[in-house]
Image (cartoon, rainbow over all chains, first blue to last red; front, side, top):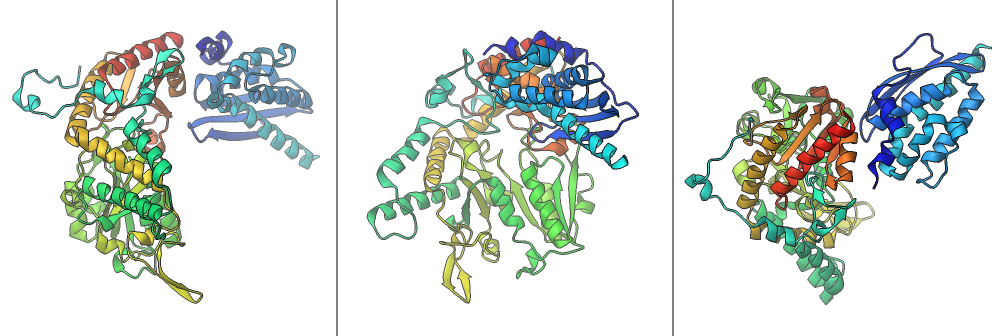
Length: 150
Length: 430
């Protein structure tokens, strides 16, 4: 196995210099997700401005894959329309579920293409998905709350 | 350097029983394979052990030559299977010094054995020793595997009893300073781990046993990590129950053992109901067989029991004293070797005394998953995570640990491979 496929420079960069880390106010919804098999955790908040995700803030602990993934998520989806963000989300989930057979579209996934190698390691896919699943949960809650208020 | 170095030529050490590790290794087919282009370095025996050809062959031979269901057939194959299954029970009994073969209950694993005992307690138990309700207490410790925590938490939820626990000292040993207060007249059972699957600590039980006897409680030891590595005599230890599992001691998965004093087993209610565990069944009600059949409902793991018997033969041939001494020397070597890795911190006793061959550590701030992944790329197999013992991680304020655990086939060369691998980990994440 090629270790550098798993630990791409991009992933190590995001791990060592995470983007947008730290919990910020105000936020529309916040969630806490854990990976029960390894104990990795993430707290993630989303702020909405109309139909736009104005901020994704997060804090957590875990391996380089899970932490880098949250950093990429922040960079890629903050400021995007909710629908756009969910489309990117779907592409990332497809990539991670592809067992290394899915060719990622860099136009859509940006730095997240670096995780293509992770998809070949079934034990690590859940690490990469931790923050993304948290985001989906938080966005769904935020959108639901907004609808209640209208 | 913190570990003890054992001066050569000291008579007491020359007298220690030894075995040829290379000859032992030749019995384990899997140790010949490669992982990611490197020779396999298997340092995860605390998780599950590898299996010698003798065990693999015994299971295959059972299926090829004797296979039939046990305890119900009059035909030849059924008789042979029953003899093989009961023969395995006799080997287990002898291995742990059980006064009677009937005190050995086969379960699917140690978890089931622990749950079985927990389920004997309740507000309506016939025997007062198992009667449990509000005001009664159960004592465990902070170094338990989840399988010796959750069954007792569930029991306390069912009955209103209170769960209490021993804390840990900074060096990873049981804090017995409040023993007399913790174990008291309200205590019904103390259930603690014999050897920690994370810290490697081997708990000295004598003081606890004395206190348990003083207050009239019961004592259970989770021996999942100790029976595979240390000579065990349940009479010497003066315990009431022990639980352990086959797959950590060279045997197949799917076979575990509950040993209990016969007098206790026979007043305990059945755990699972079904075939084989009854005395007679009528539509209006049933009566139950004595132990061990009472606790072995349904077709048991027969081939797995036969495998466990073969594993015990193997361990006896090497000698458990020799296994224990091998573990000790290897642990002394590994503690010293790991001490040379910058940024490495060991959790648990740092001297090879009162501890087994399991060493957990952190490396700088590098997450154990990443440590494990880089080591795997070099063929080195270690466990990473919370090891089903999250309270230990909480106690020492770490999210996860990396663990290397050894067995009779582990060599000092493999410890060296681990140390070299850790240097590589530091390079990747520098």
